[in-house]
Image (cartoon, rainbow, N blue to C red; front, side, top):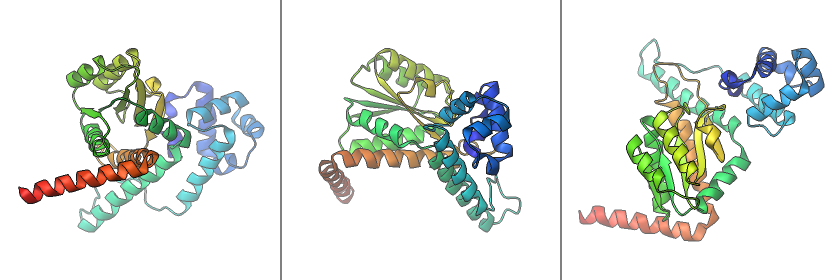
Length: 280
């Protein structure tokens, strides 16, 4: 149950006790009532409800649906996350890297809240300006989102270093949105910059790993990805793919809000870039 494992460190003691029981007995847990689960795990029903909320679930029934989805998915999956394959063959690289990326997207789907996605889309479409922050691998995600929003005529700035982020945040206000991207949710420069923007009244969207962290606790709309990568590849591949997938979902939703106008803008930019290349 990856979406529980990755957030485990954020749970309170009674929530951890409930989570441990679920992780050890997932097939049983998915068939128990909340009363029976609380009894078996030796915790209160309130602890299980709090655990469900921390899992970005609307309630206990939603938590059981996610558990059931994970169980069904894992029944047909033989491959788990794998670092650099031992045999070193090209075929093994193709299989392991592709499987890691597919699994990261599937795991992230479990964490997605339609309500949160809708809130994020609404915040962006109603903003004067969108400031997107990312550092290192997350900078790639920030720049990708800026490129997408610019193509449909949104004012978007991608800041990929601490000084620039603070400078942009100092000039944001209640009509603006800041979008902080950090897989750990602990990147100091991004947390400091988002905090300043929030102090100035800007709305906050975050994209982090699952569970409460310094960045997500500031969010008006908190989006999550998960990958459970190992050390060698941490933050560099499958988590990036999962983040890009979330960005694509947001962009599709934003484009749909004024589809005709946005499609026209996409066509104009496509023609402009094409003409520039031909003339060059």
